Structures are given as C-alpha cells and as structure tokens.
Image (cartoon, rainbow, N blue to C red; front, top):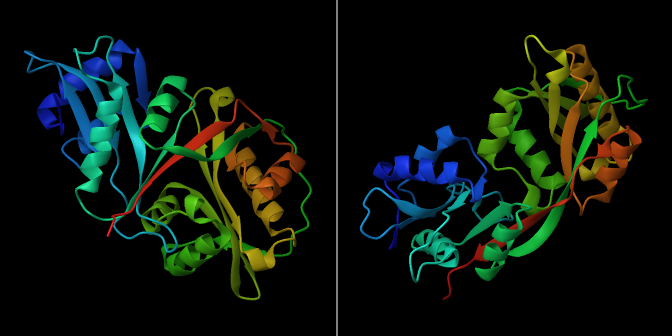
Length: 296
C-alpha cells in the first residue's frame, strides 16, 4: 500500500535510510519530520507490518508566491527504496503517488531534482521528468588573489535592499535559476552578501558562506552561493570585482578552498570562474524538471 506519510512513520523511514541500498537524501535527517504529512510525500507500507515501510519519496512544498515568469516549484528531498519490495509494488508507483499528491491542490507547479544517481534518474524519467540543464562544480585552492579592475561601489546588503535584490535576481537569471523571495531573504541572514552599486543603481551582488573548523584550518572551506550582475551592466568587470572581493573575504578567514556551481547553460559564468583559477571538480550533474499545469 502507498499512502501519505505520518509522523508515526518516522522511525521506519530512518531505518530505511540506514539500509542504504537506494538512498537519496537532499536534506538533513533532522529535516525529515517537516516532510511528513504534506502534499508531495508518499510512503510504501509493508503488508502485515504496521511499523515497516519499503519506500519513501518527498518533494518539499513550493514557495507560496512564485517568482514572476516561473511556476511555483518544489525540489526532491528524499527518495529511499528498501532492499525488498512487496509483490506488485514499484518505486515508479511511489514517485507517481508523490506527484499525484501535489496535483490534488489543482494549481500548476514545477518539480526539480538534482541527482547523478543512475537508479534515481531512471525512475524520474519514467514519471515524466526531463533534463533541463546540467550543473558544473568548481573549486579554487590557490592562496593568491586574481586581478580585478571593477569600478563599482561595494557595500553590505541589508534586508532593506530586498525589493531591489528581487528585481535584480529576476533580471539576471532565467526562470529555472531564479531564487524565490524567501530564498533571497534567507541568504541575507545566512551568508555574507555584498552589493555592487553604479550610479546609485544596484548593479550586482555576491553571496558567500564560510564553513570553518575551530582546530583544523585545513578543513575550512567557503561556498560561493550566488553571483549576479544586471544584464544591462555586464562587461564592466562588476562580476569579477564581486568574486575577487568574496575570495579575499574567505582568505581573511583562513578559507582557501572555495566551492561553487554554475549551469552548463551559462558559459559566460564558466569563463569568469576559470579566469579566476577555479577548476572543475567532479562530474557535471543533470537537473531534472517536471512541470504540471491543470488541463482546462
């Protein structure tokens, strides 16, 4: 039987994750309770075992307010498949039920899944997902700083800048890669975010997050979370200026391993990062998308 999960299923879902046969988790174990009992989640229950499950799939809830030009979206957070499935049960049915749970709301939506797991890729394609883009992953480990000749005024971004930040992000990125208002607000509080201004206009911004260890500096690393420049002001070195300033900030905190990712569909960003001595790290990752719009 496949049904929506409840909080009572949490211990069995955690045991399923520990089996580690087919496990995909794009969240922390502490986040699992928030995924239970919501549309977009489904659990496969073992027959004659009220405390056992054979599978669990969950998409997080879409933002209440969609980014203009795009559908409300949700991301695949968990896909756990047990070692043995009951007769007649399938992982395809489980994913299909999770999608159907989202459709009951009657509102159009988009689901995304970022994974390089071949078993999961096959399941997603079987349920109507298609590859929309790929991500390249980069890292930089040099201790020097790249050259920069940008002339923008750099300053910290504040929550008061949020309306202009939203406009900039929507102009700088295609719909698939735009951040929701909630995500933009989150990075203001979880990252170090610098604004670039030219002539009083918000020309771009860069967000970096540090992950430092108290006793082992070799384990320190930074994540370049976001880098954006308004399309009308590109080609003036603003993106490079923001990038170099973020690298300098990371170095000042003993973070010399800096990570980032960028879409395959953005060769200009790839060229910028490679010119600043970032190098590709690991395999490119497909980005799967499922779109549903209610039929009239």
